[in-house]
Amino acid sequence: MNVQRYTPPAMLLHWVQAMVVLWLLWLGWHMVDLPKGAERSAAYSLHKSLGLLALMLVLVRLAWRRKHPAPREMTRGWEARLATATHHALYTLLFLAPVAGYLASSFTPYAIKFFGVELPKAGWPDESLNSVFKLAHEAFVWGTGGLIALHIAGAAKHAFMRDGTLQRMLPAWLLRN
Ligand code: HEM
Ligand code: HEM
Image (cartoon, rainbow, N blue to C red; front, side, top):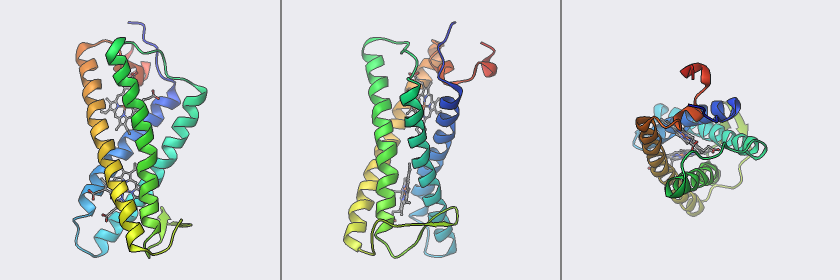
């Protein structure tokens, strides 16, 4: 089948970001239940660094996509519209979720570090503002999780139908297609 693929940088960014975001969802879900102590602090610290990396990745992805539009949809009608709407909503939430996380962390007494490098904060210790952004972060990340589940279900359906959609996000050498 003659498949129009995404560009190699778009594929690389997609798979690196997919791994980072799935890791973040798992880590975030587990770390909030850890007892206070060194393990919890290390988990929060790693979560913030990975979260900021996810934010950078989405910005690079969007910048790349502006110059290199996605290949033409292979399906038509409601399926193509649902795929496009899911991708747009995913990009929006992949931006809003880490920004809300950064703002929530800004209104605490703790430093925000990116793999050990201290970053400027956008706020000051304030419990009520911290709660507002924590709530927004929680809503955005679970929205992201729901969309990812829908997205993976869609990809699995296409893989099952062998209609070439999955190949668009996989390098030709991997499939010898
Ligand atoms: C097993 C996991 C995954 C599979 C199999 C998968 C597969 C795919 C495929 C085949 C496409 C191209 C769809 C098309 O051409 O219409 C795509 C696009 C996309 N995926 Fe995934 N994906 C996975 C995980 C994720 C995750 C975790 C995220 C979020 C971080 C994500 C975000 C996106 C976005 C935003 C697009 C749109 C790309 C664009 O048009 O610019 N994917 N994915
Ligand atoms: C795409 C990026 C991100 C994802 C998918 C993500 C995911 C999550 C998840 C699943 C939780 C647990 C929510 C709950 O059920 O209570 C969480 C909590 C948290 N996240 Fe993120 N996060 C991201 C980015 C960030 C960033 C950039 C920061 C800060 C720099 C951050 C700081 C926090 C903090 C402080 C909590 C704990 C909130 C609490 O104690 O209730 N996150 N995150």
